[in-house]
Length: 236
Image (cartoon, rainbow, N blue to C red; front, side, top):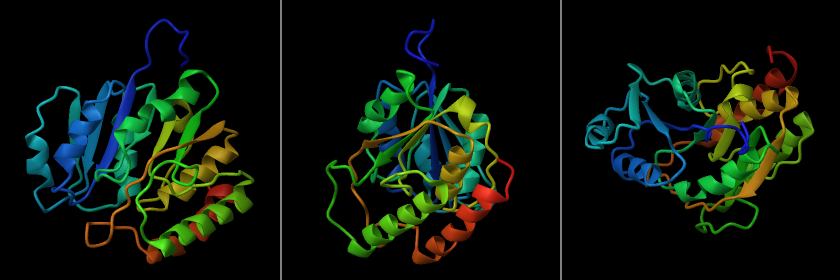
């Protein structure tokens, strides 16, 4: 859908959440304060820390909360949210404060004006960011390079958690990764589908493991296999 069509596009924000009680209510409030969302779906991935109670305190008719009975991972939570979304555009939003909902306009612009099917918010294109975790930045850049080699794209930040998709295009691809393999999988499958992908700079306030960061080097080990499988062997 483009700006010139008869009605404004509906935008669904999908937020996977696992044990994010300290931040989830405030982050959902920040999301709802933006002009973009017509629907916000939080998928509580079997949290056991009070995340569900924190969400009960958010009183807004645009918010829907779905729950997994067992912890299944970020990718599985996103699939649940994508399946339930009613928007023309879907934005992925983390439940902590690393990515700022105020960046939605720059994520949406290339889709709204008809240039893009997917937009990646890059942490490495000059936006303000917290200075933190050198080896994480090295790892992110290495995984992005590997992704670019396999997919023949020229992304700067494949692993970004700030992504927007035209729902129609997103639903043409088959996703199966349950954990953080979602990022290389969706990238490879969008590339296979010939999707028009844009990048825009976004701000980034990374957190430490003490502050709740969950992705680890173990998750990085699956990226090469996911890229190869999603690029050459899986159904598109």
